[in-house]
Image (tube, rainbow, N blue to C red):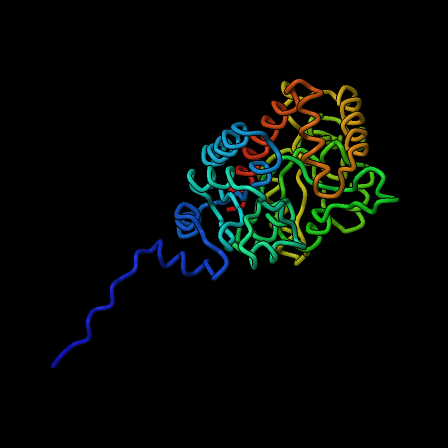
Length: 321
């Protein structure tokens, strides 16, 4: 009597891969293992690598941010579109490869499926990172600043898809506020209209990316990661849709005061208008021009605030677990 050949036992990591992967989502070994062990995860975007910072600062910052997430008790899940797949977690080699690719799309909700269907490489914006993080079961996301209502939107109607994503996708985004080149009062008004909670950490005034002050009172204030985690959990418990925004002020030692930044921003935006820069190209252009106008200080502050946000996001994710 012959017995069937024994079925090989798959390693746990392979089983977890199959549980969470689809034809479109690929988890790194580190992310898959974290899911298997119930460890907290923090999503990270990749526009900072392809559009937000010059080389080699982009790679160095991305790696440093991942290390900060690990040092604070969570596992980084850096997200990109590569080879027609959503990659959740990138190896060092994959991060280098992404930084060296040409014509990388800046992917948001509208063109995420386009990048996947055509095989175009894509760096995820806030909106696309929220979508893909949610698909992979990641609840907390750290970034620099969110998009919002652009200046002059009353005639251009230029409003970032990031704001509307908050109303749809249950991911908490930790940032240093809306990018200061935007119309922050209108951005805050749209978030309020959409019912998106905006929480500032440790102060009563909303931060403005490079600066700790925006001149606007924050809608909500919490001072500890466990308090933010409790807020997230309570929203889920009562079935509220969408995510929330956690505004984490840039460290005092690294900020550029708002009154100083205002002049730089006005000059950079005027230059963008003069050169006909529009839509998704505005933010990368203005960030690059700011680097010139501030003699590199804006980049130093940008790196500091991203690291600070990664630390807080890891602490919130750990408190959620």
